[in-house]
Image (cartoon, rainbow, N blue to C red; front, side):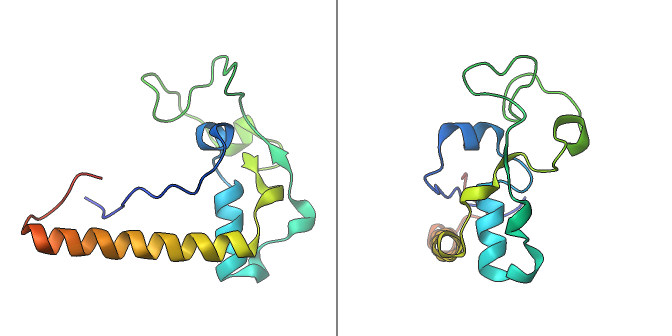
Length: 118
């Protein structure tokens, strides 16, 4: 498996449920580590569904899912709120993620187990 500790970025429920490519977190992380690849003049807020009424679309962790590609659900290629991603948030989240991974690896070492549930 992949070492992937859960990290809470404090995102709104709508973003957690329907933020996929180019969402708030991805935009912020990219602005923090490789801003030359992120054109904020094209950033939009575009969700493929609404948390209060998802219709036929279900979040990927739901019991029933469907196959899709981004262009099926978004004309912009953005699924989430790219407009609120900032380099400052990205740097905070890179640090938070690094600390979570370090803690996870340390716990694996202390426990003597090969993997932990995350």
